[in-house]
Length: 384
Image 1 (tube, rainbow, N blue to C red):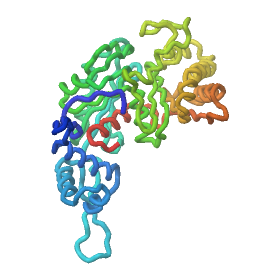
Image 2: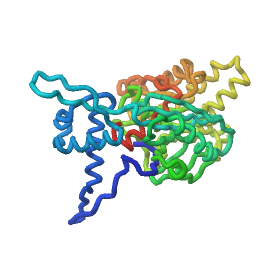
Image 3: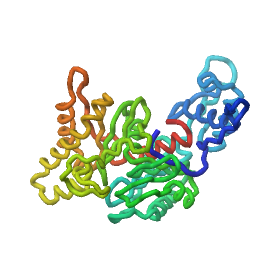
Image 4: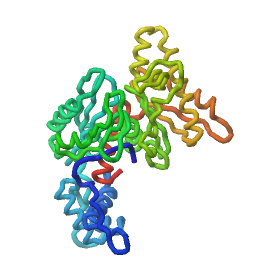
């Protein structure tokens, strides 16, 4: 679902299926148990209360299976009993069960911003209960900084931690590595395994733009077809089509920051010149505005036009009409957003393609971190 990698055992880890006769794979008991747990959790998430009998009808599982699964989930602190189902029938009313939202926590780290790493702790519904930040210097980001911040987050959680989600710039493969993150100075960094080894919790690592678009979809009512462009330390995009993240065969779908838009432009850390992020990344815009504050509106308008040109072809290729731009609020405001929207519509609007809507991230600066939380919830519990 995203450019992510996961390390560590947890409720969501899938066991390897046993090979049966005829070359077919038969489900192991652990696979069936995991699937049943996810089915029950998904039926209740985030705030639905049902009786065991209602769960059996809704899920198609037997009453015995539902009772066993519910008992296990209560023992694990993921479900809780509360209240009774109203009924006109004689006899004892049925007990309702629901997600124990505050019984477990999820941690997340957002590595996308220049100058700091943001960490959050949430409950199982994505409500932020604690926030920590760690200043960082330009250049290579040392993983020890992430370990230190994660341990602080662990101390802030009074309940068991389900897992840690990390939203990072760069490309992340399924095998446990950040393949390349030029702005962090990383190549072939096995971040998920490193953090799991140091912290002892399940770790899910996602590209920051993929995490942000998933967070907008899960926690902010985003549509199932949308593009999110993250303007931060670099520039990246998350693409959601039919409710699935587009990752690409080499995990680099959405890496628009290193597409050349001006062959005579500034040198980029990737080795080329005139990449998109050399023109509109947050540090670049902030520096230009600091040098010429009287030209702020013109600088942001020009940045929006550059981004609009870059997005025109993807919009025409996908027919996506919902575009989200995330980034610092002092940059990603009305001026830039209108320039992006007008530029795209001037180029692609026709009787075949309707006008696109460009708006800021509904989750604001928390989009990538909350997306990382959503990735943990999907992987460990299967609820999103």
